[in-house]
Image (cartoon, rainbow, N blue to C red):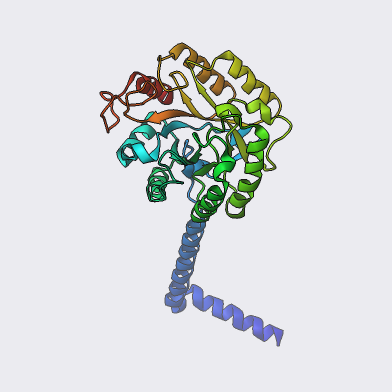
Length: 346
């Protein structure tokens, strides 16, 4: 029986090899080729598109902390550099796609949206929220990071409008929960005698609301107009993706403030320079470029991200534009603007 079966198999094989089975053999070969091609197509379709390394969100993705260093989704150090708007209630007309693209072409990978809480800001006028959303989406469309800045100033202590902040951050983080571009700055410049315990008690309530919806980076302001970063030592917010704001203006803040920043860094406090200018602290005087150079050198040495104040065309030194100009170009830049273009472009 086995011998007969072997003879049949050999006979069929001879038929296939000879002309008698040529058409069938070609059909089988054609089917095999098609299957192989389809398999190759399936493999190609499952390959992830490789993003070329760049300074923007498309490559870096969600940001997190590694010690005091800001790192991207691959654990590589990243430094954010950019410009802040002035108050959206006054200067939102300058936050245009054309201007954002120009800043990006300079080298910016972040833009900060200063949404004042008082002084005609969000607490007084909820319609500003619509402008904020439009601006956030515009920055996102340019593959940049965007800082949503709860810009306290005349309200001094963030606890003054804490209930408004709770509702706002719950709403905004729900909307952008899966968006790696967005960074939340929960109180701009605590001042007027507000101490770190006051700020931390506020952060201890706001941070969990954000974390309910998002693991994105958070920045917390520090006392004395975000100068006292060293007051956080030994008493950080209980969150592993929160940084602490340091603000400087080169005409006012010199080596003594860099010493405070260095002390904070040495004690494990991650710092984000979410606002700086080359004027005095009141936005005027100067420009003080020699001291500004020292600050930028310090920031680069310690991989500190920094954001310049501000995209405005008002009559003050810190404004990026000359008065009564709406488009960023070489002819409209103030002295401050020329300097900022230079450091962002290097």
